[in-house]
Image 1: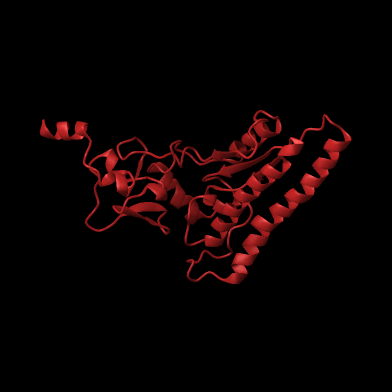
Image 2: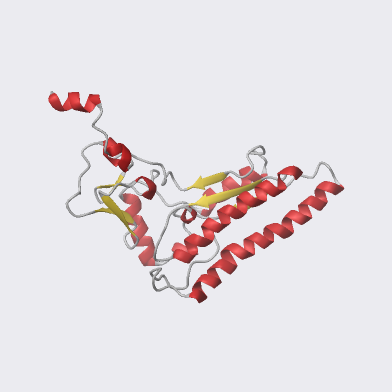
Length: 238
């Protein structure tokens, strides 16, 4: 998973030194490690036709989920996702697949502090993840083992999420779809009715717009402006 910032600071206060440290370890290091490994694998391929190998990058759900109090970490993981794509394209002619594994809330040294544990224990209990538990290093290791065995040999460039279903889009009425009574929807599909709180890690309502009356109200704005579906109008009249 690389490293987190030494201090969690709002993006308005984060330093260049912290940014450079996280980028060098989480992004620059893996990219040039891929380069060296790729060269070696190509040599092996040319020396023996039956050589088999793959490259697996371990990134994070933070590659696609923004946290304003650790921006450098999120940016480094988003960059690592592109590293995976670039090397998947470059090594395809040599039949060397490249994969990305994105762990979610996982029990590691990075999440071992009592405050962090308590925070995510509460969020998981309230429905942050579909599977109501922490991820473990073993969960990630099993996915990596599957890839090394070539179980997905014809799927280069793919991203494997190990997040307990955390990023599955859920309507407001689904089980395990709410934290603190609020709908859990990815930021790209969140309407003006709610906004994300980086300090609480959950979606919070904006004043005066705290309730969604039905599932279709959490669709993008241009769809929400349409008139309600006929089935809903019929239900309201009965």
